[in-house]
Length: 163
Image 1 (cartoon, rainbow, N blue to C red):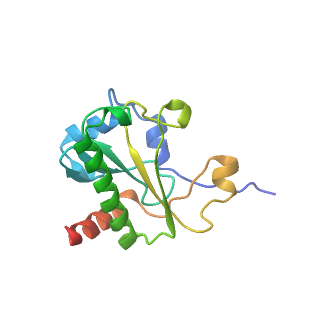
Image 2 (tube, one colour):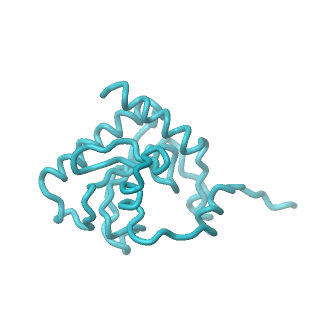
């Protein structure tokens, strides 16, 4: 019997590509190319960016602009803006990907699963009934069924409709 393969060729760019110096989120902010960086919204002291390596289609992250790693480091205004953008992000995702539910949360520190522990980020992950199967559990593989750039355009348009 021939083994089954799941092809995800877009990941090779990350695996083989050069790793950026500094904070990936701060670099995205400084680049000045929001579509290229997948930044959906900037407001005050916070912004929303798509996860390039998502758990599910539409996986967004909401971050303070200021490079801080702890919840306690946020000013009250920054904390309020992060939460406000999380609520708006959910509303945009409701219109575009229509999930059955969400996981919203923080991974604080490497032991908790934070890949970039030094820049606080709130995950907004759309979920569907039955979206967890043997692939992520046994093989650490996820299937995302739409190009990030296409989904970016749809979410940005849905967000703009309400702005």
